[in-house]
Image (cartoon, rainbow, N blue to C red; front, side, top):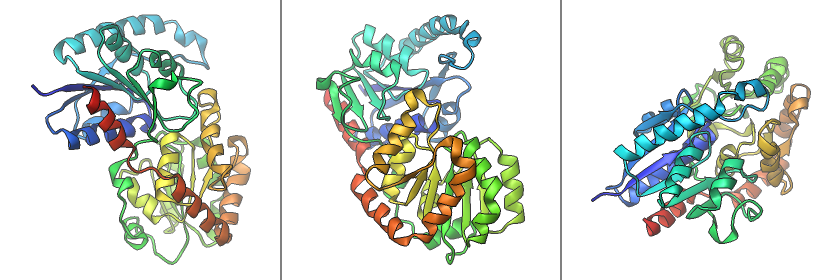
Length: 362
């Protein structure tokens, strides 16, 4: 009888895309496996997972709201309700293993599985573990981490350092710069800046571009701009006026964007960092300062300390980020050094390593 696997988590692309990469790697190794994803109703995973060809069930759950304590009043009720929903899911789809990738739905699904002695696996993509994952790690079968030094969060004997699973299309990228630029209808004779505000967008990065777009174009640069939902209308209006700018809320073919880019400006979510290492493109990080424990700054600093990236604080992005982009565009030696250093930090087979370890157990 074929084995069944539940994959829980989501909320952002940084959780969803690794989850899909792990499922794809497991399926390549054992096509008989059956998968069910469990996410949070109304979140991004409810759209992205079916697009990747997998079934998903949504839980009525939300996380702890740090900015408005009043909004947490319903949290205990939602948590209790989610456990009943999980119980129902396990009844109709009894799993042989459960994988958690972070996000609201991870906790009730893995907690329920652990209480029933079902093998559970956690993938922690950040260099600073989330509270739910730390609690679940104690009873997990295995904890896959992106970086070493995670013993302060998880039992040392359960950790396997695998790196972050990068989408297959990016890991095996073989598109020429010229081909990729054609995809965005941009010419090959200008340096291209890729601006990515994460899957949900980044106000400070978008504001920086909107404010200083004239300086960017005057410096002879062209722009591929993933805006997210924040300020997307303003960005689109600017793109209509300038043929050197391609702008959209979301880039589905991210491998094309990485192949086209000469310089990247981005948030420093764990998956973005992993993908940029694989793409080996010079980067300026603008970490999101309100991420739990400021983990994006931690993610970015690991690369900055090695000379593989530059960093601009979110609070200074509007004034300084574009000036930094222009400075990097003029500094070919630094761009070359960044690319070479990123090559050494690149991990392209994390999904395979995770899949092999899970298949050993179930």
